[in-house]
Length: 343
Image (cartoon, rainbow, N blue to C red; front, top):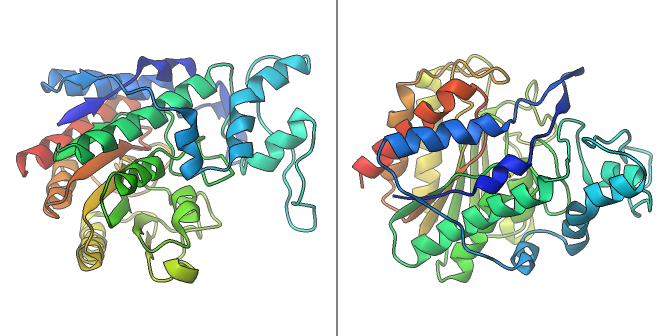
């Protein structure tokens, strides 16, 4: 399996985030990708560098004004006389105007962000664009004949919508991979999100499309981030009605319940008749994850990899969450090793 990785992820080191009401050091840290890289190299995988995609490729899934904001946000922050990490202080919630973007950087940040847990620093754009290029490169490799490829993306992407960022995510790497597969000849693409947190951004991007099926198993938004999307009654709209499947599960879910949901998800993907698969690979379903609440042991990740491989589809795996930092490499390697062994 080809492993696509960029060291530019190190340029994004967020500092502090607001997590469940407390200002804490960021759980999404550079060490996450470094532990994954080390584990994969130790397992014998070779790393390849991402290709140089034009930023215009981002506009297939993101609005141009949003991308322009991300590219210039920290420079504008500096021009405003400030330094360090950026967090928003106000949002266009109910009763406030949502039809115009404030000209000042603080207001613009609140317009495009949906939480105060996703800091922007000077190197954030470089890292986010490199992650997007990793995902698009992995998709290109699969389109060119590789049976599978893994994009070691950091920062992650599945919370980033068409014109919104949050949940540690700026550009939607998995959505960009799916779009690349579509543009390169795959008629139907299934995008399966196994991260503990619902991929609200991915759902947003493909909500009205019937060529990309979005399926997600995640912690229930009744109690789990991002709280306001991911319910079972969300099924898509317009041409996309019926092409979103959410399988929310309660805190404390163990393997038996998770495996039953996995059966449902894999059957829906098979029924869809997908020509290719993108996996938003969050390993924060691990029982030791500090910001998640499923109870899956490390031994379950090879099982997950084997179940994903059972679909027999050309597959792009895109790294999302996983915040038990010292275990993250082992858990990702468990998925990829079993996936490759079953192909």
